Length: 170
Image (cartoon, rainbow, N blue to C red; front, side, top):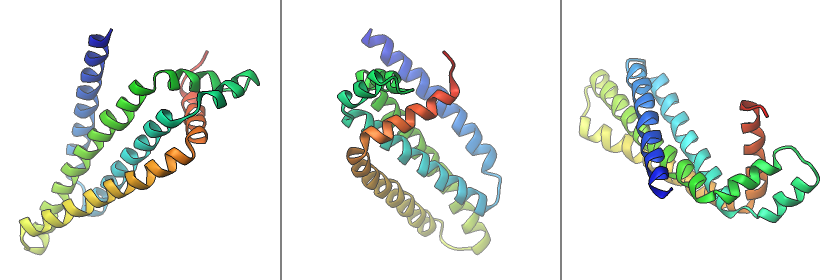
């Protein structure tokens, strides 16, 4: 079973990275404002999924059992996520988070190339500056997000499950 999970994570990572890289390359031909918006959006997505992964790990299952006993929609699904919290966290924090980090880095390079071409400035300087900004936003966002996720884990998980319920039927 453990080998199946490893294979699933590998394939999921490969497919998501391929799809996001294709999208990033297509969007790489856009202007700098669009690239900056895309980069910020990717950083935001990575941070949100890090919050979700942390919330699932720190959520109290008894709260969701209480909601399930009251027949509150989504509570049973939340319990399933908590029972599989290591896998959920791995996908949210590691797979999606790492992919977002790679994509934001590659869009950052595209931004640096456009800036250096237009302003005739040092590629090294612009790349270092953009890399530092992306790293600060990513790490800072995740640091704030982790604290928030640990304090509001039950609410975050329940909100996430309610959102997921929009995409499946029983």
